[in-house]
Length: 319
Ligand code: UDP
Ligand code: MG
Image (cartoon, rainbow, N blue to C red; front, side):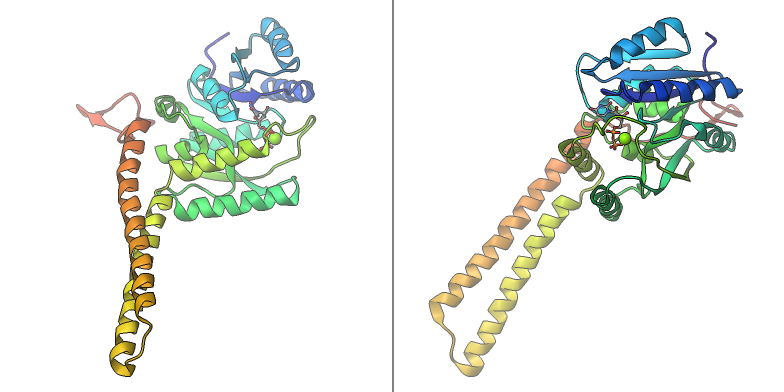
């Protein structure tokens, strides 16, 4: 096969029911597209016969590039394996294996890529999922956006097209608890959102358990914000202010009216005061832990977009 321009990446975990639908749609897409496309499928340690189906396919159709993981690592890690394996020279597109993300959007995404966008991410207009899940997602993205130090776009998941140069940075980010949609935003460059309607699953049941979703949400919040730590510090400062206020009010009462309960006042003041001091101390320790945490992540310090040297753009520039 020629070197592909585009890799379409789909992680699969126990997706044998949706597999035939997926392959049919992807084949139709490849047949109708002018681009050279490879499909990268990742088997995330499936327990059904997804891996067998993948193997049969990859051995007969060389447009399919299959990676089999040794066990179930979870969606974000499986996706990372796909991103690392992709050979697409221009860009990669990330989709879910259950066809909730229509792969046909490739042509629209690719148009934006040609206009100079490095990341084209899909924004859900509507979800075809239960009200509880919809609500949880809605709240989560809004909270994350409020507290995060980068502008993580609302209602966008991993469904996106990512240029080769952004992909190279992503592959060089070794952080262990991965929140790819956040990392993708962190990398920067020109990014654009494209609204789409998220369909229901074609077949099978959701593979993300509540626990896994919760972990994903945690990764989003703790990897891209310092808010939980500064919250502790602020709570401490608040407690100290209450203690001081209380002391002031009591002193005024004491000298103006001459009557306050003695031992009780001192005790209450000391309890609130030292609770505050302890929280502030935790917040300070937290700040150091945060710095260690971000250092240990080993993210690149910065990502260069363009460079002109000796009167010429260097290789990574897109012009
Ligand atoms: N997935 C995976 N490993 C897992 C869980 C899920 O590779 O441990 C894949 C799954 O096969 C699907 C995609 O991740 O292609 C999204 O999973 P799911 O549809 O369950 O998530 P939801 O759409 O409910 O968020
Ligand atoms: Mg799904």
